[in-house]
Picture 1 (tube, chains in turn red, blue):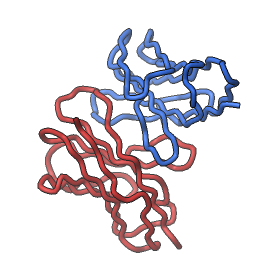
Picture 2 (cartoon, chains in turn cyan, orange):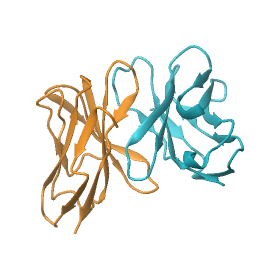
Picture 3 (cartoon, helix red, strand yellow):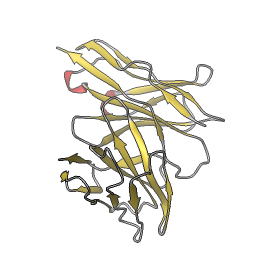
Picture 4 (cartoon, chains in turn purple, blue):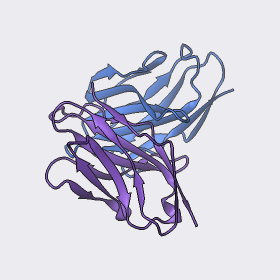
Length: 115
Length: 111
């Protein structure tokens, strides 16, 4: 069965510094991978996805993520963090060719950007 | 949040009551999902439906029921059998673009 691990419950970074939020996955074959962001008392907002092609994926709000098949990772990155990036971030996975079966989510990583 | 609406935003339930959470989407998506979110536990799947008039149990379906009579609607009923229903409930839908789109959520509190 597929699974996602987000090894850090909390990540703290100073404003203007680069940020990384880690995600590793376990799934058979080449996975579909996703990142979402959640602000307090709101639904999840889609940031970016990897389906196929370039391993570096660019998404909303200046975020990007790199698919690394050998390390089974899909870390979220941003070159320069903003205080407004402070939120809860979720990584998710779905096996390929699985139609609209539900995404499997990690437990989330809380990002705190300090001014 | 665009395209998926959930109501109400806040809901209070007394012990022994059934309550129904509404989820509507105008994205013409075939698939819809219900998740429960508790602090520190991420999202847990309650039920999902890939087509009208069909649905499957997720990981924590006990104490919940759903229906999918229309493509745009997927209501969730929290029954009195659900012993600890206080949580944030999220509805989502998906079409041909792989990702799921989420509604704004309903926060349910048991009094």
